[in-house]
Every structure is written in structure tokens, then in C-alpha cells.
Amino acid sequence: MQRALGGGAALSLGALGGGLGMAGPAMAAGGDFPPKHPNWRFVFINHVTTNPFFVPTQYGAKDACSAFGCSFQWAGSQKSVASEMVNAMNAAITSKVDGIAIALVDQHAFNAPVERALEAGIPVVAYNADVSDNARLGYVGQDLYLAGKALGQRIASLVDSGDVVGFIATPGQLNIQPRLDGARDAIKESGKNINFHAVASGPTINEEFSRIEAYYVGHQDVKGMFAVDAGSTEGVAKTMAKHGLHKKGVRAGGFDMLPGTLDAIKAGDLDFTIDQQPYLQGFYTVSELFLYKLSGGLTGPANINTGLKFVTKDTVDVYLASKSRFEGNARDQKIIDRSGPIATS
Image (cartoon, rainbow, N blue to C red; front, side, top):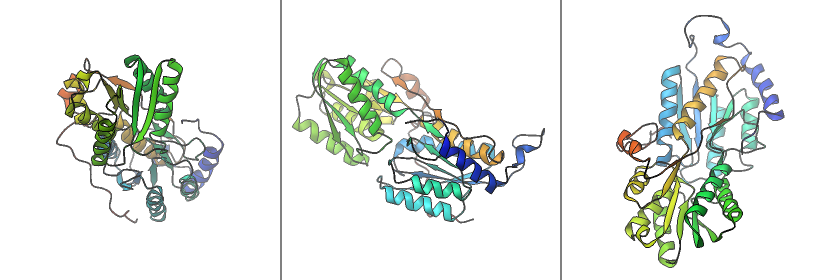
């Protein structure tokens, strides 16, 4: 899903450079960093604005803004409705914000809005999900397909044969569908007699748990239950614990670092989770937009892979002990409420 900056981005750099004058405050040599600059306003367009996965992303954005002297707003859709995200992006463009971060969860819906933003001189960086033919200037996030392949390889190492289910909150959306595709491909490549079934669990945590539990009740011969998103992973964890499935030989795992997920790994109800460092998806994205503005378009946008790390019972204690804002597992932290109307300049 990642790509090098190419033709579309190069054209956009030219358009943006003209709009910004290609002469930012950092052009002068020497002095403190950052030099004096306007209080640039950035907007993050998100697909699930109240999902707890993005708590550390918001803290990362907040910390970067505090360090650099800028501000950000959180907007988009609560339930992955692309049209609502497009409306939020159009509002950001109309209000002349200084930069836009967008989760490109749809293959085509955001191509035109991104072009409009670039033509208006507003830099755009993708985070969390990417589209190969979009003109955005850079992408900050996990290589989603390869992460899915790693998931599938781990599944094949845990299950020899039988039915395995992969839960996905919103099928087709580009922040999670590539993971499911990668998992399916890796299982097939393993040559094992595993029947992999994809099941939609829904965009909100309450929906996910109820649908996951209902699936198990109707398929009690399942050998493995896995998920490709944070909420579904926690839903798998709750179902595994409620029905004592790990003791019955069912294997389970998924993505991200929600508190319930980490507790389930410690308790032995989940075999693993995959960390994609959501804090960096906020901090690095703000850093790219800020540097672009500061340099007048000379530097900033880049593709940054925020990585993949398996967390298991052998390694989970450090996460439980730290209760970290960097991983989103501090229990007293709530999502920052920044999802009101986009402010005008």
C-alpha cells in the first residue's frame, strides 16, 4: 500500500510551492529551532473518530503540536462513512487550514478532495491507511498487507487444520482489508488444511463483541479466532475468556494494544497481538506537515513505516507495567474530544 513520491506528488509539490512561496521561516541559517512561525492549524480526518485505538494517535499529534507550536483538530466519521469524511475534508479546505492528515480507507473517495487541497496550497499526508494512486504527499503507518501476511504466518504456526475465522470491522476499507488479504494469502501459502473464513464484526466495539460471540455460539468447532482491527481483537479476547476457549484448544490473536487485549494476553486468553505504534501515526504525521510548512515545501513528506511487533505472554508485562500514553493502554486516558465543526481561519 505504500509508494514512493512520484508523478502526482511531484506536480502537487509544484502547486503547493507556488502557494507557499517556497520560502518558509526555516530558510534563515542559524538560530533556535523552530524559528518563529505562524500557529499553523492541521486537521486529522478519521474514519472512526471515537474509536479508542486512536487515543495514542491523538496524543502523538498533541505532543508534536506542543513541541512545534501548532494545533490540530480531529474530524471525520464515527462509523467509517466515506461521504462524511469527504464532507469534513471539504470543510477543512474551505476553512483554509494549513495541512490535512487523512486516513485513506477508500480506494477512490478521497482522490478528488486530495487534489483540491493540493491545488489550494494545503499539504496532505495520509496516515493509518493508504491508496497507491492517490496524490497525497506521504504516508505514515504500517505496511498493512505485509502485516496481514505476518498474521497469517502466525496463525499457520498455531493451527494445523480446521476452521479459522478472521474478524474484520469494516470489510473493504483500506486500513484493515489488506491485512485480511495478507493473512488469507499466507495461510494458503503454508499448505496447511486450514479453512479461513472472513466475518464482518462492525465499526463499533459493542457491535464487534456481540457479533463475535454470536459467531462462536453458532460455530463451536472453530479452531482459531483472529481479528485485523483493535475493537474486533478485544471482542475476540472477551469471547475467548467468557467461554474458556483457550483451555479448549482454540487459538486467538489480532492487532493493537487496547487494555482488554493486553489483559487477555496476560491471562492466556489471547496468544498474541500486533503493535503498529499508533502514537507515531500522530506524532510523525504532524511532524511532516509542520516541516513542510516550515521549509516552504522543501522537505517534510515521506513514507514512514511505523512497524510491526508481536506482543505475547512473554513480552506483555512491560506494556502492562508502563500504562503508556505511547501505546494507548493507560486506563485513565480518553479520546480527546476535537471532533466538532472545523474552525475557520
